[in-house]
Length: 424
Image (cartoon, rainbow, N blue to C red; front, side):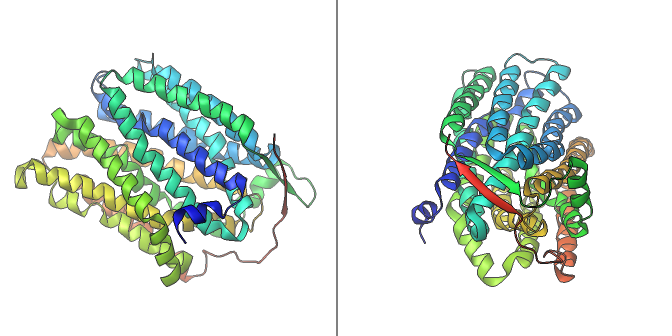
């Protein structure tokens, strides 16, 4: 099935969510690829402080997903999507004037918490609307997601020629437009439990008693630590490698990531589904992510084989990371819903990202510190070896879970949600 036909085969809410995600990512990625360079350059922050700012943004998003997911299950999906876009508008607007570490941390926290509000709602909404076609829906969704990653850095690069603050203001404007668009165009969709009403604490106990889900979430920390290096380690390495062409190199990284995902997502998903299924696909995808840093180990700087070879290695690493992420994402999202037994899906997504958010915060601080130490010691390849080891450990954990049957729900149950939809 061609991409356009597959897209049209989904209902209006799913298609609207996919289009909205493209806009969200354009606004987000026109700024984020250049934030590390802005913090290190004009603002002069140290590597550990940059890691802290980016880590706080991710933790306030992924770590607070539990709040967004719980509210999505209780208040409905659309209100959380709209509220998140409003808050991200404010967070990016604050980056226009922030020039101190405390102000930057506040802006990063606001921007991150915005994602904590709308991301679980988007995924739970899409899972509910697509039903048994979840893997296909998330694969198509990821094409729009990655297309935004492809377009965003190019828009940001053009605006960066003026000033980073122009980029931040433009990103805020994009989210302001998205707020209005989603408020009026996105259908309301509320998942209502068929069983008796429960308290928030009871819902959380239900999730925390799901051992298979918790083990899977912990194993997936490695996936997020590796994929996040597109925003931290790779841009910082580009600044060290080619400082005079840093912005262009960073744009190349994100363009390559977007092209690989947009062109290959459906093919990768179909190929993996046909040959391995969900559990094995997660393991193979994780191994691809671990292998992504091999070129950086071989070409850690321009001293050995020249600057061009080191830049090519950097771009190839970004491409392989994108391929691995494309392999993992649809099965990852489907596994969360499956392990949740289609019950409290938003809350499960919330806990899932809270767990990996803690891992990302720790990983970012460790990565920033190790990069600085490795560069001081003259052994830049150590950081890439360490990241590869993280990926191999995560793949081993996923393999163990798959082999012991932990990646499928222990008990089969019917969905406990009925969908009540209306257009507002």
